[in-house]
Length: 404
Image 1 (cartoon, helix red, strand yellow):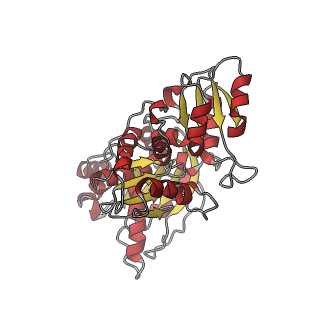
Image 2 (image 1 turned 90 degrees about the vertical axis):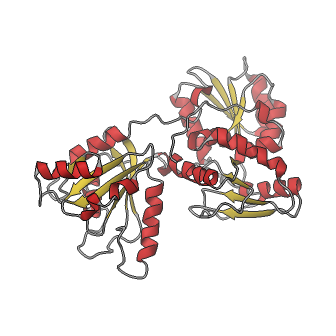
Image 3 (image 1 turned 90 degrees about the horizontal axis):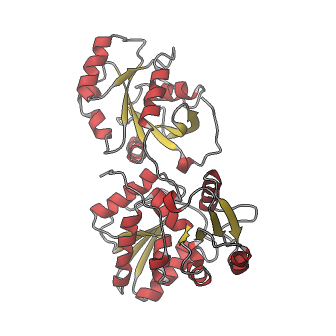
């Protein structure tokens, strides 16, 4: 198992280990990683906050394995808070490994069913199998939880290879790419990347880096430029580019400089399809025209950063909302993992591109907005709609996994 921390966490397969206190979760993550990642002890509540480890697993690729507190953690007054964090991790996991020893009553208590979500695999592990290795017991447990049960001993390593094979099999799902069917090998793509205070000297923002890397992997010629150099860059080309990708904040200016026959999109719009449900986001943007005095909007950022001058989510979008709807509009802003449990008070949710989140994490939020009957869109689509250029914007055809 190769250790490689270079892949962003948001692009890794998130595998969450769930079970009771002292069921063998921490020992299992140590066995999978081949090193002491989590503390193992007989005392309940040893695992407090979720423990994460970036790892490369054969057949599954770049992963993050998350060890959680026991769902029955009542060891002290913080037990409920620990369990809530565990539930949050489980909710946005790509794969869940359910861990229990052979005699744990959770096998027949709906434990596995509680972890299931449509489109998300659950792998059942009978831990501490050095204490009970009978095939008949495995068959009984498999019937109880309606899935294959893998016997694992974290001490001897028995069953670890079988578990890794099961993870690799569960990871075989079609994942969208950032640019999807918008480009082909040999295409020339122009990327318009303003370098403002949000992108400190020496660094590019993550969506720019991810998109540029994918274009190179696809065999495209990627030409990077700044907004003030866009016209001269286009004029220097012997033929029109197959696609122009811009930062959403300069959508209007770029649209004016790019011929209408050249496909145009933005990094944030691409992220809408890569991490979320772009068709739903486009429909959600229709609610913008209905905003007025008394409306309430939630702006949700995946990043939790100190705002800088002209911050897009905390300054620019709120300014546009006030311009559109007047000073009577109410705007709430959340960052990082903060997200309201009750979305019903809102008339619109505007989410960032979600480059710091996994796709399931973003789709979980989208589903919550849908369940509350609240329109949801994203930064890029909001800005293109306000600029009046949405009919020009292109995005890949994508499919959304059903997670409801």
